[in-house]
Image (cartoon, rainbow, N blue to C red; front, side, top):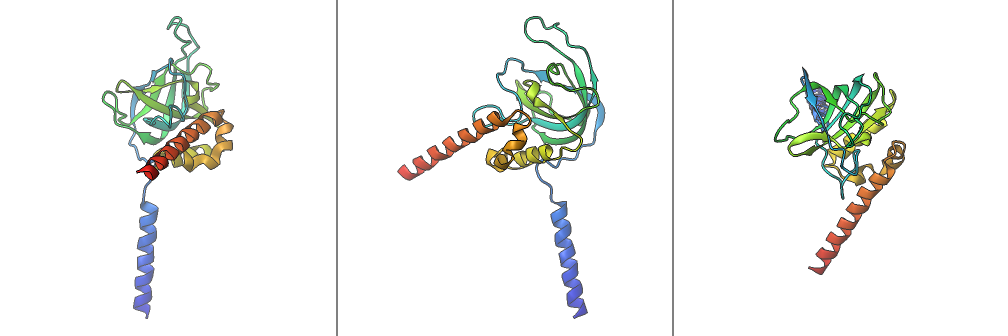
Amino acid sequence: MKTRSSILVFLAFVFISACQGKKTKSDIEVVFTQDTLNLGYTYWWPQSGPFIGGCGEELSLVFKGTVTALKEPTNDPGPLYMAQEGIIQIERIFKIKELEKNTYAGQQFVTTDCFNDTNVSVGDQVLVFCYDFEGAYTIPGKKSILKLDATDFSTVSSIRTYIDSDQDAFSIKKDMELWSNHGLESELKAILDCRNKVSASTNATNQNN
């Protein structure tokens, strides 16, 4: 009887350990280097943030970090946009898409000149959403750099759920109020509406066939 009980306990331990060790898509381990990745700025894109495009453009690089440096805004780019350079030290990576030109390779720092109007300061924690353009990572605007409160774990949890579900907006529909607090309610609703229309169209086609 003791032998049987011991076996059951051992099997339960193995099962629990296996479950705890199972990683999700957003659970990414990175060995950081002291290098810096330069992120482009697609300032002409009409949208920014985690929810852009028709039914949701695929995110290419998503990470959490701390702003370590900020320069003063400048109009050096001319009439195109007001530039403000800054540096973010990455703490956690949640999404990496391999690209043709500058796939992420463990750099601990990123630099970009799209900080103007983001309302962040040196020392602030941020959640950053990047896309790709012409084979390189890019940030399309200020809503792609979200300032996080020190106790805000819900936003990170929600975006991880979104990534783990292959960006299925329905997986975070319950978090509408959370994203509304970040000024992104209309963007998330637009993605949900698009998904609903696609789903309805697909169902109608299947019924007619």
